Length: 468
Image 1 (cartoon, helix red, strand yellow):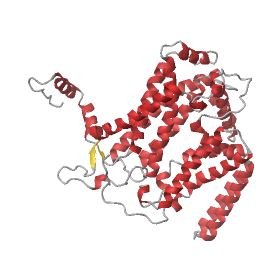
Image 2 (tube, one colour; image 1 turned 180 degrees about the vertical axis):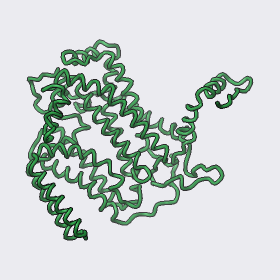
Image 3 (tube, one colour; image 1 turned 30 degrees about the vertical axis):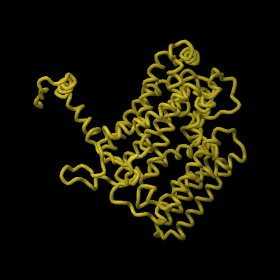
Image 4 (cartoon, one colour; image 1 turned 120 degrees about the horizontal axis):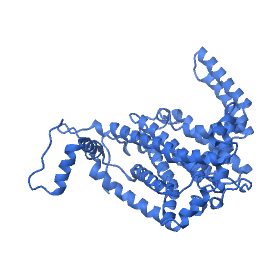
């Protein structure tokens, strides 16, 4: 047992309370030192580094508002919509809590998308931070599941029919599809059983997994240290006497105060949206969701919320003609690998056999199944990014100039896919979605090649920092 400390005679009450707590709960103070006051982060963080703390803020806000909503919400197909209306109209400040939660869902995805984008442009996924990136991608996947299940709970028209369409997609999976979709629904149609199990997962199961992943993400980050806009490892240059990184500053108070600026701006924008345009023109809350779910009345156009639409657009892009094109691409790639790839004899056979199996699979299973596969792989392809990127430098600052253009096209393409996912299918829209889908996957799958070419700039030994 550690020896108890004594507060100095005549010490202020705050000091006496601190010493009393430190004697009885030293683990908390040790954690504070390790993760806050003695955790040295790079001094050159810029505004892109606001979004990690903002993601944590929105997570806490979603949990707190969710708790208050659960107090009045009824997970019953006959009463769910009415309970939401009761929260909005009769519960004191219920409208504010509900709008904070619904707007918070969109804010969460905006913040997380920007946080992931920062990781991509500064190479925050590269060695030794591979595990941080993997935990982050798992958080993103978990967040998508949480949002999808919460999307059903208001039991409006778009909630009901959106869930009906997405769950029916699982029926396209060969052999297990019909049973899997039946398991997810809990019934032969989306109904009370579906609502109850989605409510249970949305309120209890998925948040527990999400919190565990967030803790793992933060612990892994603090074990190896934060990246920075220069991609320089600050632990490589330490003060010989103290062992403190020369380019590092304590996370608290320096970066906690720095983050307050980002939090203040975020809260101003967030509150403006809540009070003046909580539906955001139908993007955050669709107009059809203010109509009770009617299994006999299908909306004219069914589309998911904006943060799912890029992947939904990829799903719709996979048609029979596109499957044929993919089969030809796989066959040509295999032939080129055999003729020009410099492979040994046995590997040529492996490539040809593998390509033949892929082509057969593309032709055997229908386009709807491959659409589901493409939608899923579009998220899963993010996980191996640390090993796909073969660039000798981390930050985009020191990569060839054309890399910035390529990353800009990637963002533009993602926005286009998201926009097309909101619109009804059309011939030109499908064609553009197909091109966008090919570019999306090409960006990642060809990264081992394009990330190595070009003239790279010299990375400085120490971080470049300009006070602001």
